[in-house]
Length: 157
View 1: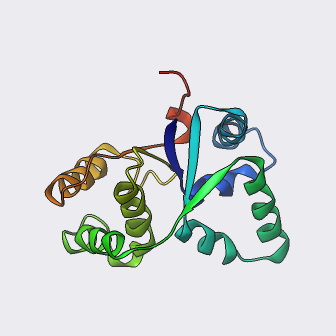
View 2: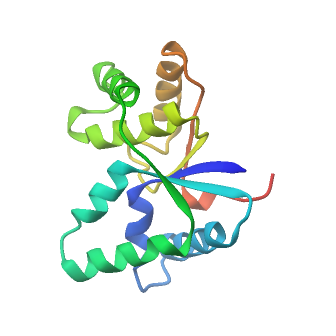
C-alpha cells in the first residue's frame, strides 16, 4: 500500500462549484483515493481540528460529509511529532504562526508516510521548503517526505 497524508487545504477546493483547475483536480484526486485499493490515506488530527473550526455550520457539515468517501486513518499527536515540529520552527523553516503546518508535516514524517498532498504552495509544496524540511528530517533520524499538490499525484508507479 502506498501511504499519503492529505492536508486540510485539499478539502477546501472539494466543495467549490467551478471549473477552476484546482477544483477539478481536487475532485478527481478525492475520487481516485476513494476508489483505489493501492492507497492508504492518513489525516493528521490537526486536519480534523481545522475542519471542526471551519466557519459556518453548513460548510463544516459538508466538509465532514467528504470524509466517509474514502477510508482513512488519523494520526494523533505525540512527543516525537511535537519535537520535530518545534525543530522546524526553531530552524525558521516554518514560522511560529503556522505551527499546525509544522505539526502536520511532522506527523507524516514520524509516522513514516512518504507523501503529503496539499494545495499550500507558499510554504509547503515548493522545492526550497521541501529541501529544508528533509534536511531537518535527516538530522533528526527520520526519512524524507515529498510534499506535492493533488495535480502532481498519480496512482501509477
